Length: 238
Image 1 (cartoon, rainbow, N blue to C red):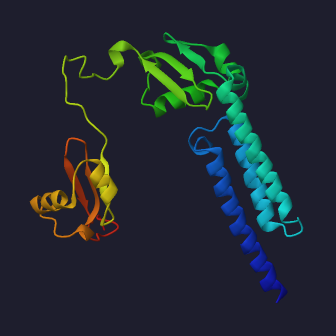
Image 2 (image 1 turned 45 degrees about the vertical axis):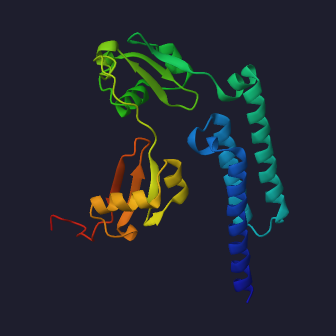
Image 3 (image 1 turned 120 degrees about the horizontal axis):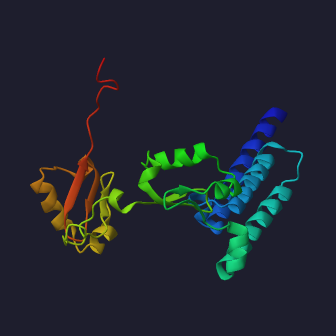
């Protein structure tokens, strides 16, 4: 009986810790996921460690970890507000970009300052499709550790402006059918209705909404549908 109670308490603690983590992550903002700075990283792993401790250690009073996680979250929000209002605080907490390649020259001193070795620099360049450093005019190491690259003018992709072309403007695509469900609000947002959608389906010989895994419509009224595929063998070469 005690084992059942212990297991039940651990499950309850785990569920609550996950719920609290979700709420705190929402409060701290999406930057916690998409653009981790050094401070965000420290706060994130600290809150995660506290949540794990709360879930697994029944000797710790239940409210102590909650208070600690709340304190970390409040501090993170305060820091975020301060850095948004103060340039000096932003530079101190989040760091500043650092040029590591300047007009084709590797700035070794800046690499040392950022604790980045040459192999890591080359790896990040290759990750963005630049296998030859001679193609790079500037490379900037951002505060989040990512590398921003400006290629030399003769190595940049050709744009319509380079060719004196003026292609029509493209708008955002709205998902109007998702997993067989019609998104009425999205459909209305692009100025279409269900009758228009049914006509588009008829033209593409789609019998039912349930056959569609995703259908989109852009601001120019272009309709695209992706149908659910029939099951295929996992390995087509057996």
